[in-house]
Length: 376
Ligand code: GN1
Ligand code: MG
Image (cartoon, rainbow, N blue to C red):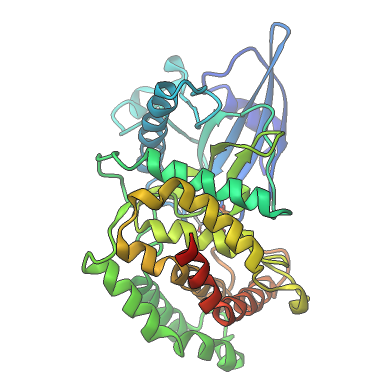
């Protein structure tokens, strides 16, 4: 992380109010670095989120920032029409101060949405939403229900968004593309770890065909493509103090995909009785009660607009995304930990094992999950 003076220099490029009082780190994101910036404007304290966007993960940060602005502007209009508060119910991107934009920046696309520092790092800001609460895990079915409602509503708000979005990460939830990367990773064996991973590699290979079969239904249009969030874990939702969903955040991966992925990714996170990186596998399983609550919340917003095929494959999406996450953690371990932030040399392997345990638990309860969806 940079020195405080550097950080203040970065903040000074953006349209913040008042004087910067404090800049401190926030949250456990695996990809970007996130800071909170406290400003004093007269007597009022105004806070902002400053992020160093990971340009190794997101090769086109300007395009991504433009996606975020277009999507949040669209939601703002919906919130306003419904009599809500557009400044609290969706993200507000903070733009560059006009006089901080250098001549050579002016020709660049979306140059008012980010700042690129001398080291080549990309910075972006948005308003901090006061009075919001985040969770690393869902403690109660009531919270899971609300989370499901929140993502269902988010997708509904974007149902008529028809401007093409830039693909911020190629083939993000496209398992066919993930297998291309997977084969390359095995071939490279960059960290020399493949020889010790026969069992884990077997977990991936043994389910390859059924995952590809599901994805072909997306490719041939049987399952429709929509604007989706693609990273719907619980920590990417802001709740208010009464447990109501305020705002869906982390719009970096907002792009076109199947809405099922948002459901599956949320199930992966909300229903886990353990942690995503639990070393104690006996703690990890899928809670069917949480599944039911999330599904009921989600379907309360989305059921009417879903196709037969989406409903039919909804439960499977939890298997698909959890499987993909096992693959992604294992692939990063094989690659020598280059994608996710890690806190131990075996962190990605621990994550792989914990996600695989979760996947097995989901597979074991698949028939009950389908019955719950049918009953909704
Ligand atoms: C990453 O950025 P963050 O921490 O919200 C990742 C997700 C993974 C998740 C696993 C851009 O999410 O896809 O599911 O970690 N985001 C990206 O917890 O790869
Ligand atoms: Mg993210």
